[in-house]
Image (cartoon, rainbow, N blue to C red):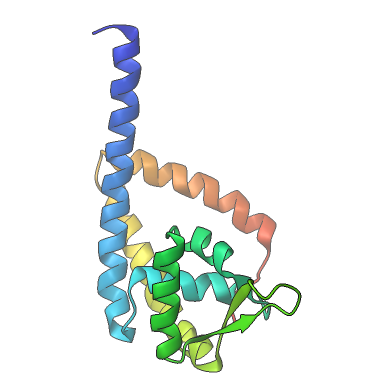
Length: 158
């Protein structure tokens, strides 16, 4: 194996480790969020909208925040709108523009889901930290998150 092959293998191993951690976290979050009848991606949408602090988001922004295609975002928004959790608003300046924002019911469900999400994330990261192959990645996540939290101050959701 040459140097180039070694670099490829290191990247591949890093990707496999990241995918394993992601899978562990996502499974724990899915289990926890079933208590409030939400999937992880549905929670992600509610979370992104909640972080707007009273403002709304364009559908393209929401698609990026949820890591979904535009068509998948539209389908998801329709399902959440049918459940009364969010609403769409036509842009006054651009009729093609559609904004999305949480309804009062969406805020209420988000407020119920957030502690479940946060506890599940904490459990998943604690479990991962006990696995030698995942522990360095968990440490790296904590190293990234702590400075960001210190700079953000205390801006918790409603």
